[in-house]
Image 1 (cartoon, rainbow, N blue to C red):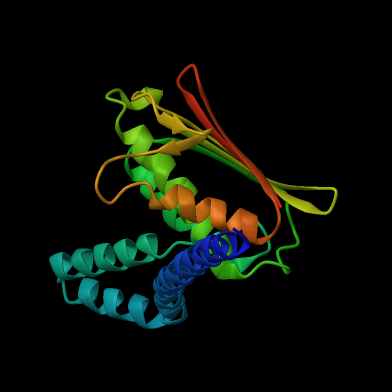
Image 2: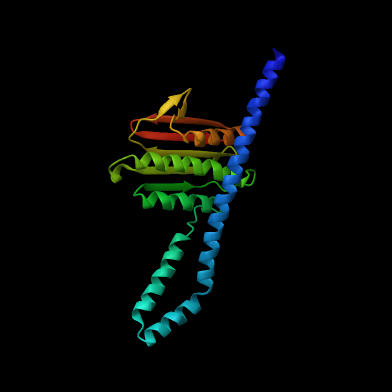
Length: 223
């Protein structure tokens, strides 16, 4: 009996380690992409003088269409690489900016409240995985709502008793399914995000909860 239990525990641990490894690799890729966007925006800001000279020359030579096209290109690039500052942690800002921009593009009202200041004890790939999956699920739920004015995502990151607390709430139209108090999806390719979130919280010996009532889904975690 002891051998069977040990084998079962070992198998479960191996699955969790594999999941965390996969999530870590994906998180690193996302952070790298976000960092590249920020670097590109910084390059444009640094070269602002050169841009202005080019535009000035176009105007002087009456090349109005060329000048307008160049201005639009710069604005588009800067806008896509804009990083909103929510806290002092640059990596957290990168993660939040990416998903909040996506949510707003889908006409989802967002409210972000971050007072947490110390993220030093967490691996950034873990935070990226947790926040990315949570926000991605929230965005997906909101997009199922046919009327845009009913879509919202509220996120709070704060500290209490030297622990990081996450409170994420979003509206939904399609009632989520639960098994053992965990939201589940039987659609192909879905459901891994929640398991990834749980694995991260468990890694830091934290507690979590998923709740759905009256059209609002909530994810809470302390770790």
